[in-house]
Image 1: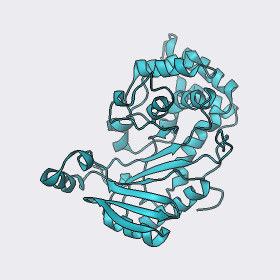
Image 2 (image 1 turned 135 degrees about the vertical axis):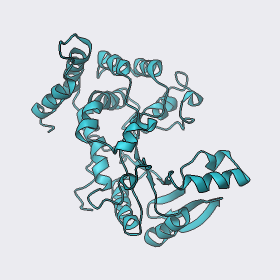
Image 3 (image 1 turned 90 degrees about the vertical axis):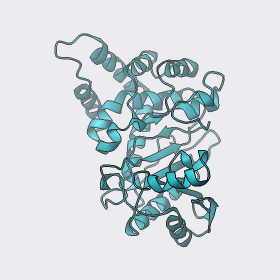
Image 4 (image 1 turned 180 degrees about the vertical axis):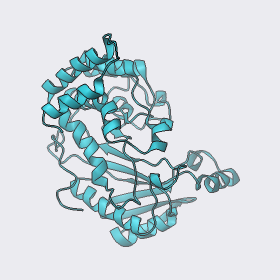
Length: 319
């Protein structure tokens, strides 16, 4: 990957002045957990060891520690024969997942090179089969706990999600699966009315009013549970218990690891675009007003937010 890839975010440092880090979760098929761990130890250094059943851990690599496991709830909840049966059946449709430590930009570039190596070793992405629905989740650390550093990226994503899915579509199987469901229209409406300078508590309350599901393109529950567990408790999350952390959980991106034209940078650009819009509160305010006009006022032929969004972004120099 070129050094120009993985563009720095508009706010590249956290509240302590240190580079923001991003954890990555990669789902794919074609290789066993043991094989992936062995490839990782050879390419990145460190020690590969089985941690639990078929789960593997590679410690001390250039990227920190890596977790490698079949992404199935039976992995942690079942035991003995039932677990082994579930794992064998799951291999036909359920991905192996690699979970990284939080990485700086250089770490993300090295991870991208490692994904290229896995491709050459036979890794298969979401487009290889109609039964696959594999994603690549990004967990960018928040710039700070200030309201604007949380509210504005959320608002930017909510306003452009429909446009983003149309312009940079995700794989068809993932589109129909429930794991990356679009935000409810009423949530977007409330966020647009609150605007880019909204108080964090008001945004959290609007979010919980309309959804407690983790299965959205941008899952905000980890941040909300980290900062305000009195407003949303981790056990309230639907689709899995929430692990509170000060990081966005961006679930929308695909993993097309077997496609030579695909890279980690392709998916990073989606989030970079969200934060680029978030850094322009005047533009966000305009988009809020236009979204409300397109979506809540009567139009004989219906609202035309996609066309309006495209025009706004183009005139603002983002297209």
